[in-house]
Length: 445
Image (tube, rainbow, N blue to C red):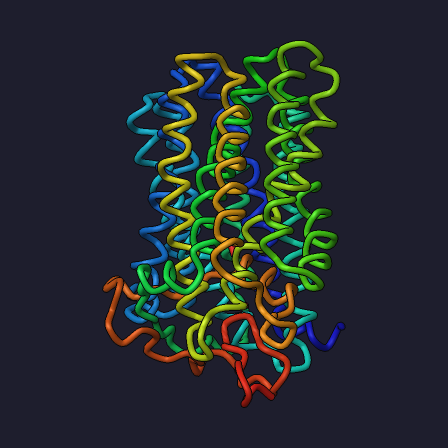
């Protein structure tokens, strides 16, 4: 393990520091916006702005890296993200916050792209699993640590915004000082969204549903907690419990989906998430002490959905379409996550704060119904065609590089970019397609 991690230790350290700052901002901003009496719609737009910027970063990031290189691009994005963290504290104006949050989303998309390109470059066929396991653990734990900082410092304090800025700034140091060679230039793929819909409507719709539901959760769950009487510390704990539950839920749902029709597991996860959403509405109204239990159930079922959708898409994608599929699902998720918070916040404003989880329950019910409908029209994949769920967890954690010209006729320009090492038969990597069919030797959400 040590020999696998050593070549990317500086990058992983940067990831940990960066995600701690991002996790802190993700909960701090909705809480502070609520304290400043921003409307529910304004807070929803704040969440949508992040994902709009994130989607734009996925499109434009490869151009920046090709122009300036990995290290310069990384340090530039860190500088901008650090600045935007402070802008929120200095200018308490919703429109300014929307712009700053969009810039933050853009920066983090590019930062993730650089980081994951670096990890792919340095990982070998034997060490890729270990490297991305550590990366996934960092993703799932460090964000939680950032959120829990809210339990010890008041969100009205400038100190939290300063700390978020400091953490993001410090993330540049390990990468800037590394002596490791930078990765090869990032190549891009054209994404044919209509084609992805044709080959796997359930996978495509799943990514949209996760964007609509989980994007709303990230943007508005702190506001829900605030307006149902939670203190700041309780909100941070609630968010952390949901995230950790999502990490726990990956394994049982994934294991089950490897042994049966994944669509059945998607229906099961959607049903549990919908019931948990209803439970959150009821506990928020009548039994606040049970919110953590309901939140745990919600996270357990709602967060693995992207990986399940990615796995189902993986089972149907053609041999050279893995990168295109992962890139397309990411963009579809981002699109849903732009729309979702605005829809949910409008419902919260018109009905009540509890409408957030009534909304997510509706999304999950509709997704379950659509999946059941598709099960009547298409047989399940055979055992030979099914791809391991573990590859789709990696697919859900990583960013592929998207050509700004969507729906290109040629599909993927290069399904196995040189920045990623070749993969032996039977062990597909995070962005390389597993062979399918008789000549066979993957994010979301």
